[in-house]
Image (cartoon, rainbow, N blue to C red; front, side, top):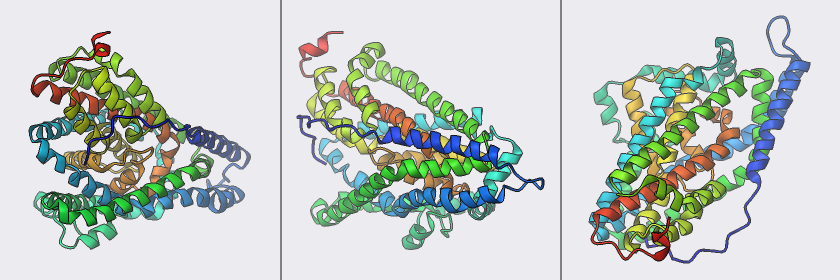
Length: 454
């Protein structure tokens, strides 16, 4: 992967699509509550037939179109993103020490992020903030998929078999069954192992690997194009999904979302202000207050665009002019980090999967949660640095742990605002790592005048 240019592109006009998604969320939720009040369940407790027809034939199809577009590209996106992410680390061999340090700090920060996320989700239990009756209604809504995934989750494997299944006997069978949990081996972890193995092999013969990498880049770009198209349909899809949920389940769904958002934001705040402050002061030898002040332009850009890639030019400039980091260090770490260091997203994925498992009554033991932590760290390497790029990964991982993949429809309406927040965590983590690596390298370049000020 080559260093990014120093010039910044002319900013594009920001899309208001996220506002449309919020409006769709509100319209669907309010409309569903009104419909439930106007067409209450019968004396037998079953939904009103007219309301059930509207949900099944209007609201559900609108949401299903959006969700299926996401599910359609999950496997090619995961495989291409992970292979490209690992193959892009070929620069690490040329930079040697910088690459190894970057990798070490990335694993450290991502691991801490996932531990914080899982710790918050286990402590607050946001997915348990519903009555048994509401849980039964949700399970009934996702009946077929929920029953299959729960049975697979309860089956369990010995530690030996689980470790052996990380290496797939037949990668194609694992790829086919990864989206619904029906794979015969390690499922999503086996798919990730396969992709990481291919990416690592390509590192050692970059010239001959170039044609394959070009094809994979085309596949990745095509998947991103489909995701962007799906997000244009998201306002309608979210409205349909929320109408169906609130019309059948009621206001409990909104309470559930409130607890989920509070848990995710709380974990991100701990990662941002506690973990990053400790890292930048102990490993980067900088004052946390001054550091956060000097990167304010980057954080605002990340929040506004919800994209690590779109924020990269601003981050490169600020790292040089405001923090005084060496060009070779900041260019390498920030360019790689835009796709290979998504620790805010890793945190979010862990919380979301555990939340969905709690909603559907799937209990994950310590071993399963350690496996989930590993998956989230690995997913941070390949999660696309574009708005809502984590949704396909969450659907895939949720299915492998016993929650229906289509249940991500519960959180899609609030995903965008959380996406904006986790992008800030992602990009700030990249700059923290760059500062930490920079400290350990040879003498710093002269600090620019703009970096000397407060």
